[in-house]
Image (tube, rainbow, N blue to C red; front, side, top):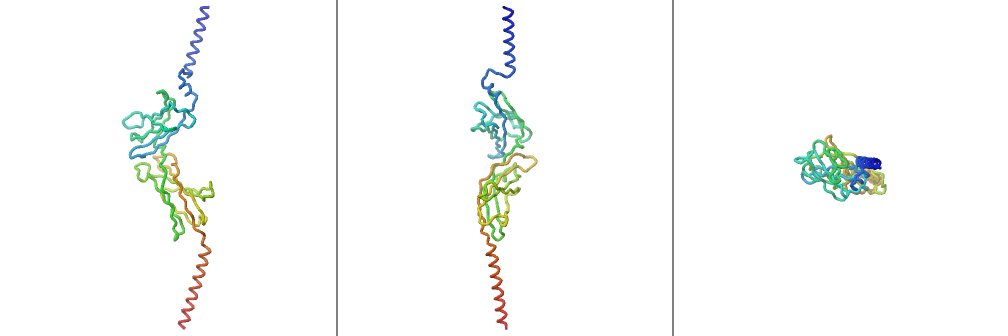
Length: 260
């Protein structure tokens, strides 16, 4: 019986060891961590507050229980090896002047001080510009055109100054029928003849980095602006032209008769 008891004890011990090596931890938090998907995505915004840059990360699965989770960034930093993120609702962020802006950094999700998952990324390749603003549309009657202008905070920045802008506009009644124009300047001309007369239009803009060094994602859309096109007066213009021609001919005839 002693031999049998010893054998059973060894089997039980081996099962415990195998169980531990397979990741079935005693700690309930780590056990849950094995079951969840902690993949995440990040974007950067440079010079958001003077020389300070912003890096924001969030889990791709919105249902992840992030109560005890932390984010940490290491490498690609000035003067320090690692920095911890702050948390606001479901977003983790860090605002600092210590990003080197050269080379890769390692961003890790931590639970109980231990890394669950990590990603290597270069924050200058994940730039999301700030949204354009102050979209204005001015009608130039003499040229039969609309001049669209807008502003962007990146014109005053040291980094990410070159942007590609996507301008979209539509008839207000056509919810999904957007017209798209890509430009590198902050000014666009829309010809009146290509728009419907006496109609209300909505227009908005977004931006993306347009350089080989800084890359990334589209910004949020600017607030929408609205403008109305004038009525089509082509028939009135034709009538006015005929009347003017008739008056000139009558005037010329009168002048000739007076000379006689």
